[in-house]
Length: 150
Image 1 (cartoon, rainbow, N blue to C red):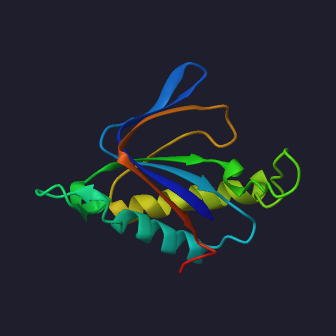
Image 2 (cartoon, helix red, strand yellow):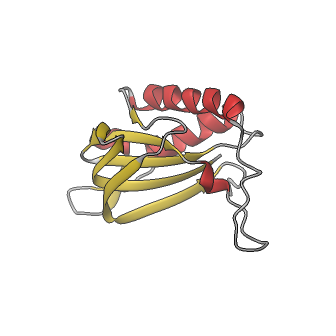
């Protein structure tokens, strides 16, 4: 499971010219799922994200977590995070899980994140053509791969 975590001051997801998700201060999480991902990956990653100390404290030092600031979250599924680009110029997505495997993992990831932060998270729509807007605050962008926890 790969995640791109972006600290935002505003983010939204639009599908068919309709805003389906919108937050102010918090995190936009792009999540890529592969067939080997498990509930262990979900639990580890959601805990890691919820507790990352990437928000400024009273001294503007990154010392507070999403939980500390009661921030909001948008989660968007993005299979292209598993693009293989070693050969040629057309990325291969062979490592990305097929929808029948990815959707339940994606839904479990959302549920676990809600448990971690104690509130509802907003989402895009799996498989939809989405327009994702954000104001990256900092900018702060962190990439985490559960297959490389070191």
